Length: 465
Image (cartoon, rainbow, N blue to C red; front, side, top):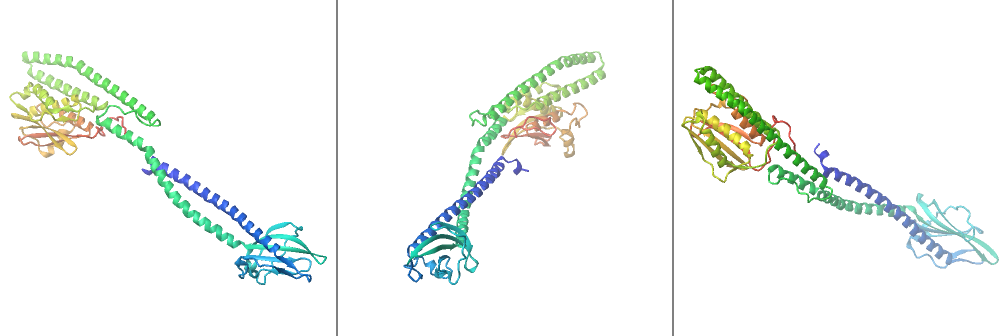
């Protein structure tokens, strides 16, 4: 399936197919041209021998045929040497032949007009097939006209050997040429598709947040793709802004009713209805937590920002807010993070994570809370620790589950779940462990260079992979 989706292999297979067809057609064409050239060349050689034999032919007064000079080609002298000649006096039935014919007589063909020539195939010695050139001559000796048929021939098997040898040599040359051209096709395909690889790298840069848009300095054929992707990025960014604005409007719209409920709870307590006030306060707190999580999920559902946020500044700002809640009274929050450390998340998402982690730590710590960080190959981690009772190993999975709440005295169990949702949206994870302070340690680990991705539980999001 992978090779079927590869443009390189698809283009290479198509190029090899066309190259094979071109080489086969070239081979057939060259063989045909060689065959025609060979036939012409052999015909010229036979005509030359024919003229030479006719020019040296002699007839004495008694009608005896002879040659003034034998042909110089040694193949005429070697028995069955492949070249043959024969002179036949049709008037006196005299015959003169080359030694290569031995005792074989070339069969007579069709009649030839005096001075005319004939080209034909005929049976030869040792079951050979001969290509013959014949000429008819009339020679007058002592008042008697002698009609002579001069024949020169060659064994066609010699021509077949030449053709097969040429085809074999041509095959070697075409095979070598095919290998060179195939390598050229592969280089051409790789070079031609290189702009697409550059676009893929640029998309990775966009997803990692290092650039905002793809460069339009690309080949003309790739430019429409880059333009459409930039348009898609613009649309996605506008939708992200609108989603965050809607989330902010929702939070603002719910803040007033929750504030009114808080005022009612305070009046109920002043009137002595503490049980009702506690119940309403738990319900209001549950509503606030659910709203917080849904707002966080709304932001994640519409995409995560590619920004990176200074961790120390955000941690100190959230710590000052958490220190004012009743659960944090008398508890010290220490931010042990250098000022130059950045966390690869958007500022709002980092505030959401820190707010939930510090709020959770404040509820369970005895006196100390610490915010720290760790760095490893390709990852960076945020740590929030407390000196509370901590959690047993079998309780940690429950604490991370949606609505998981081991402490029934308060809270909705959604804080750590919100942190987990945000971390997974950025391709990270959340783990729980034992702190050096004696309580719970929550570690949020995110990739430091890879682009954010969406977890399987998050709604579908645009992807350039």
